[in-house]
Image (cartoon, rainbow, N blue to C red):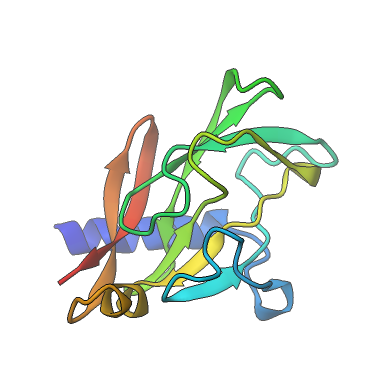
Length: 151
């Protein structure tokens, strides 16, 4: 059942995430650059994308592939506005990890973020585990999220 949920999250992520082709890939964020498994950032537009708008967000977990996080829409002072999206699995081992730091109010120009991608297997091996996978996990208030699980 957990694997099925992970597959559904991956499908949701692929439908929701735009611009994740190699031409849009960038270096890892400052929070991820020295972490094992960091693959770089890519452009992400939320399902309710607001073209041309400068929007503000906070992240509930910072750059922590082992914790499922939720990216919350806010105003420039950090007051939430009801917009949100969770982290997601792109494959059995690839995680979309939002950034920057935990609870840091930051802007998205053109309502477009730049989350990190992580190879969960490389992240877990780098932390001393035998292997790792990406797995769906709760991160309220987001309905769905994901994290790396080490074995």
